[in-house]
Image (cartoon, rainbow, N blue to C red):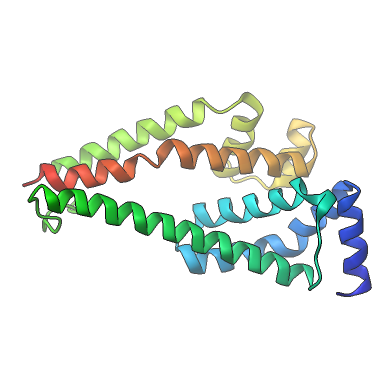
Length: 199
């Protein structure tokens, strides 16, 4: 590890927020691109990277990095992506097994057709659930999320408008993405139910 990076790690251990901001500034974009190559989902890729960087902050006092910081973060993000994909695969396999055991077809040709009424119903229900999930976020967390995702403002701009630090903005975004992902994951089950209802 280069001397400069060792200094960054030492500062992180001491709880230096500037060192933590350095991780975002130097590595966040690349890590998100890499994660998206794995999971093919920008929303989830950002969530995984945010969780990884936040975990580094949580364990900062015991942090040990013997390779470059980027290599360490790439490995950590890759492992989280693999874990996510394994869990997702297991969920789909369990759902498909349950459907097949009931004698239902899982390859109905009209399932993903926009003209199919159930698809339209699920879309409307999902939109309403997203709205409610956002409303359930804590006030400042919700404000940060809306300004970032709907008003397309930068973290720096949001920090100035709300009078908080950029790191706090990133923390709220991480929490918002984590909660929304948890709240909306049940729609995987709704999709599996849809397979059964169209036969």
